[in-house]
Length: 96
Image (spheres, rainbow, N blue to C red):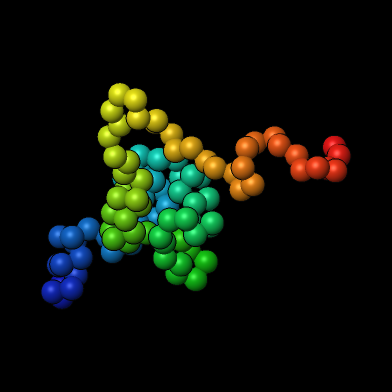
């Protein structure tokens, strides 16, 4: 006899996804997903030594990766500014 929890889990799918399952759903390489999770750049769950991803984790990863549409004249990549002004400038007395 199945409990109501068993029925709900079967209908909703797995509670947590393996890195391979999550990567497949996100259509990214598993190594990319594991690396980002290890760097804590994407949300994940650790069950002991096992890395897992919840539905909410996957939705957040996808939402955080979304970029606004770019139009003509809009840079496709954000520019990075370096502290201290122009790139490659040296202060007086600085030697290479």
